[in-house]
Image 1 (cartoon, one colour):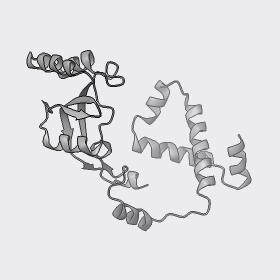
Image 2 (cartoon, rainbow, N blue to C red; image 1 turned 90 degrees about the vertical axis):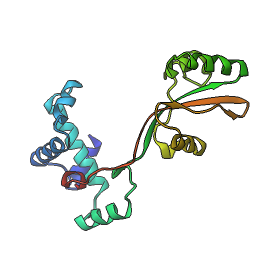
Image 3 (cartoon, rainbow, N blue to C red; image 1 turned 60 degrees about the vertical axis):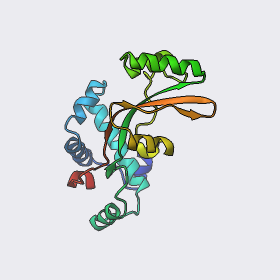
Length: 193
């Protein structure tokens, strides 16, 4: 209410036509926009009310800021690695961390017998949340991984484990399930807007 009142006092309150235009824009961005919100329990009135609030917030925060199409083009050109413009390279990685050398032998034996890496990780890994995460490494964006792991991901083929790595009294083995290259996200008129 306060936000809407501030917008009204500053002559920035959205009209019914503004809300309708924003709803149409959101549906161009995401064709299932309304359906998803309705499945979450929102009525059309609530959706419109939320959009009006979003418009008011944007107008208050952006008061006095005028962004031209050339500004958007310049930003895109100057920031090609922005997460809005490029998906980083990813890798689905599983890991087993053990602190006792005898557990390494058990892990290796189970893997030689053909047991899936995920199953072995859930059974033996002493990494935090190993069972809950099914042995999945918590980060899948390669640029965000520790540098040593980035190197391992680069040189290990998909569907293959790494050798054991000693790390501060622990031993770690990784399994690279699948990698995906970085990908530029096309900038459509809707995305540019």
